Length: 363
Image 1 (tube, helix red, strand yellow):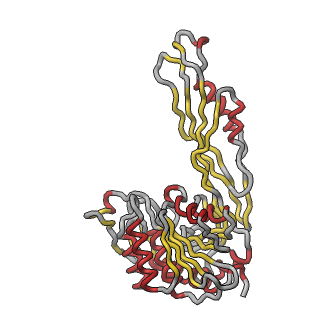
Image 2 (cartoon, rainbow, N blue to C red):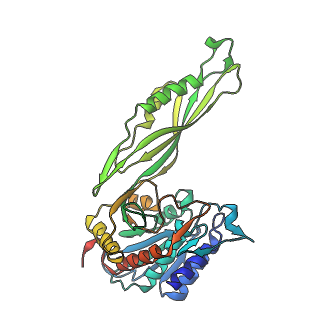
Image 3 (cartoon, rainbow, N blue to C red):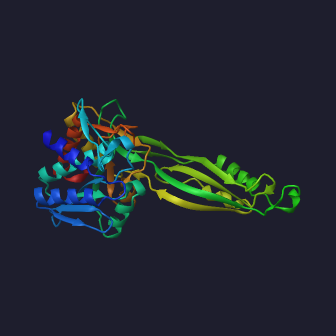
């Protein structure tokens, strides 16, 4: 436990919200010191290590990220992140999301005795939409299977480590309505962009968001208007209006948000599209859940996450993914972010068991 605690605290103490270089350097240095793995860095800031890369059989990757969201002012002191332990939890920016899981994966990667190819990857830019993982995929990172260490704790019961077999994605888009400005005393001489935007909103309200079922888990998508901005003055017919749309996507079909373009003067632009994830191998999902139940007296369930992760990008590229990690719902990105040392230890055990086994539930 002390080794896991010390490594977690070391990684958490390194600032990595503006620049992930130092955190990536620390991870790469640890791997080179404690393993004989082939360790590489790329210009995105990713750290990728392989053991038995040329061995026969399917490959498995233990996947995390070392960037974090900006810290609360209470989480920084003299340029470093504040880290402290209290009642069997470690507190500090990145403890839950997700340097604690990275530390557990590093130790499992070192201690595993795999027959097939085993990778460890810690990506940069996850909090910016998966910048690092996308570059790694473009440069050939393509494991057959992956366990992604994002949070999956507390879904079936408080404090229980679960296995997420699916998660939603997020598509953020802007609907732009164009009109023609005119003096408000001469309404008929202009084209009101706000009215056109309202017609587009009516289209959005009538859309049916798709739903999906993955290995017994049900996911429901959603479409929501979250911002409207238009007009320049009280006495001017507005010539433009923008509507921000937040869409939670599920594996399979998408809502037809582009239908708004049937409204005259309206266009639709996708700003960000984080893909959902669905595990496509029931035996792999069952095998990792068995490992979870081994480390916590039979507890743990298959669950679905509402949040997008790097697993979505990997799954879209052909990797069979699961999410299993120590962060609890609502814990990440908070001023008092923390992680349970006990759950971290359980995660390390699961990662080690997954790394030792051939993916897909085979022996």
